[in-house]
Structure formats: structure tokens, C-alpha cells
Image (cartoon, rainbow, N blue to C red; front, side, top):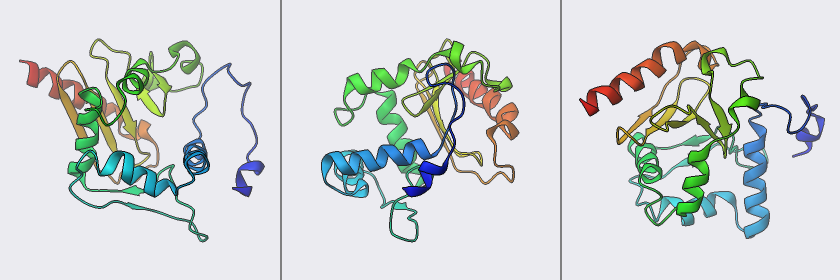
Amino acid sequence: MDYLTTVPGQGTHGAGFVYRTPNTDVLAWLITRVTGKPFTQVLSERLWQPLGMVGDADLIVDEIGSPFAGGGLNLRLEDLARFGEALRLGGLGVIPAADVERIRQGGDPERFNKTGYPLLGGWSYGSQWWHAHDNHGCFSARGIHGQTLWIDPVAEMVVARFASHPTAANGANDPHSLPAWRALAQALMA
């Protein structure tokens, strides 16, 4: 937690988009503070168990036991897909429908486009999700080595992918992945 106070700001708040993985860690800390329960327990009680996940998940922790919510979740592929399907179907009564709707709205593409993501023109980031703002309303969770949860509501499709791309940047696999997800959607709708 002390480390975050050493991270310098970037840009003017509200003027543009800047992705920062530690923001997700801060959200986990807030969840712990507000609920009075460890983040892992809240995740289990509010999502994992109600969604009927098949396997247990592990969350990487630091040397003092703080969970790394910004990228340390290890789970079964079918559970990742199950979570995506729950979001595609409006939350299934587990995730509040209003929260799912807010997730689907995304962020402000105008602010996002000022940030230098040349492969993601017209996209945005909001509620911890990446949004294509395409005619299918696609949104995704993206890991830096190619891990993906891609949700296409119109094609009724969820793609869950584990990956270990050697380059730690989505720009290294977006030119292949994004067209692949769209081709899969078109094949499903044909």
C-alpha cells in the first residue's frame, strides 16, 4: 500500500484515460475496508459460490499476504467463461443488472482516443472493462500477455482465453485476436 504513494500522477484527472493496474488493487482494498472481510472471501461469497464455479481459484499475494487483484487471479478456463456468460446474460441475479448495464456502457471514447492506443480507435475503458463500442456492444477483460474474456452480446458469444504471449502488451496480439473474435461471431451468426 505504501508503494502507491510513490507512483507519480500522469495527466490531468478527468482529461484523458490512463490505464493503471494498481487501481484494481485499490478497489480490492476498498472492498475489504467497506465489508470488513478479506477481498478473497467477498469474491467467493458474492461471485464464486453463487455462480456455481467448477473449481477453486487462487489469488497471488505479496510477501505480507495482500492479494494482487490487479492481475493475480488464477482460475479454471470454464470458470472464466462462466463469469463472462453471467455478464452476457445480465448478471443471472448474482451480479446486479444495473451493474452489468453500467459495465456495458463503457467509458468515454473521446477521452480514451487521446491516449495512444492506435489499434483501439473508438474504444474506451470503464468499470474495469475494455469496450469496443462496435455494433455488437463487445466488451472485454484483457491481460497483458493475451489473456482475454471477450463478450459479444449480439452474437451470444463469450470467448475465454488463457495465454502467455512473450510480449507484455495487448498490442502484440490485438492485430490477430480482435479480427479472430469478430470472425467467430460472424460464423456463429451465419
